[in-house]
Amino acid sequence: MPLSEHEQRMLEQIENALYAEDPKFASSVKRRRLGRSSGRRRLQAIAIFVVGLVLLVGGLIVDVRVGGFPIISLIGFLVMFGAGLLALWGGGTGSSSGPSDRGHGRGGKESRAGAPKRRFSERMEERFNRRFEQE
Picture 1: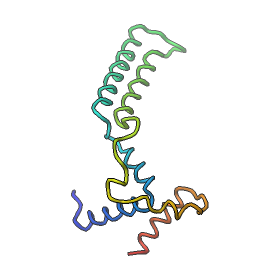
Picture 2 (picture 1 turned 60 degrees about the horizontal axis):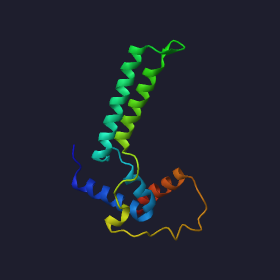
Picture 3 (picture 1 turned 180 degrees about the vertical axis):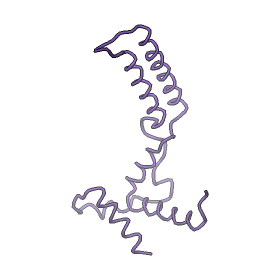
Picture 4 (picture 1 turned 90 degrees about the vertical axis):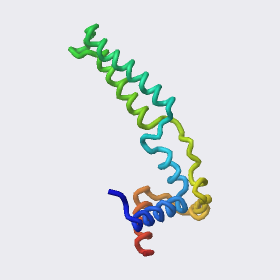
């Protein structure tokens, strides 16, 4: 179900506030989205997956067992699993330029310079509470 106009505006305001308050975190989250891998990275993941599949099936044919377990097949499965993760996460840094492409500066970093170190969850909870107190 699509979002209503009001919900879209609220989501956009929250996103803009996130970029304004913590641009480093926002760019980190934007860079790590699933499904953002390049075509070359997908081809590499497919090739690695095929190698893992060959190891998986070949391990059953060769029948090398360690402790009664087909070890080559296990290695093949792990290679296939790694290829799947590579395809999902894409590996490396993304091509996004972070908050600068949205028109926001690097504000907020100077004001936090003297602040004591707090846990991530405490900072996020405080920001969440501030947003709802402002409305």
